[in-house]
Amino acid sequence: MSLPIDLSVPAPQPELGIDIDTVKGFLAPDEGARLHQLADLAAQLGPVLEIGSYCGKSTVYLGRAVQEHRGTLYALDHHRGSEEHQVGEGYHDPDLFDVARNRFDSFPAFRDTIERAALDDTVIALVAPSSTVARDWQSQLAMVFIDGGHSMAAAQADFDGWASKVMPGGILAIHDVFPNPADGGRPPFEIYQQALASNRFVDFGLTRSLAVLQRRG
Ligand code: MG
View (cartoon, rainbow, N blue to C red):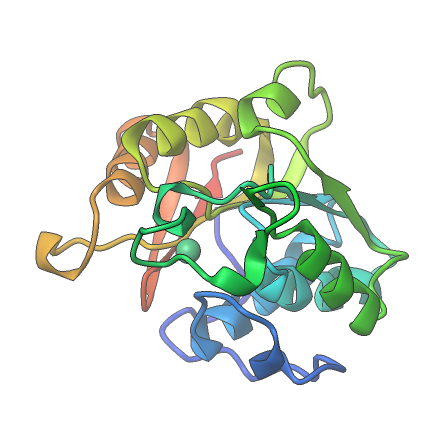
């Protein structure tokens, strides 16, 4: 298997139709450009699904490419925040806290992003836990992007639920993969290692912390 792009070269920055710096999130521009480039390939084969949409930054990069192919991007997130987004934790953002309901909720910000980016015809929000959506999911996916919770339980559930749904020739991308433990937490790296050990994927290396793999035929 191979991909018709050179992953040793940075992907060109796409025209996104929105000032991406106004969208909260934890995705570097070169990683976003790579996602757009991969989604442009994948959308020619079938639907794309991301896990961990947060406020929609990666959704815009992926969705803009998918929209050009009149495809579908499923954006899966329970929108209650990962462990690190909760009150008192390192990545808590008070703007995303619903005071009336006393809960974290990134879904309003996500919907605003999708509307501002004019991606309503492309993006389908799946607002539920990853494992709940995976349970009865049948469709093969041309690309799965895992960027959900960073606990081992969350990352494992994302991998177990979705890696098997990538179609032959399709792409599995995993964010926040840090080979050096000093750079960040291990669970995304651990599931990346599991993907390699399964021998079902070809490794295309890292763009910053974005791991890119292709499902074997
Ligand atoms: Mg991430």
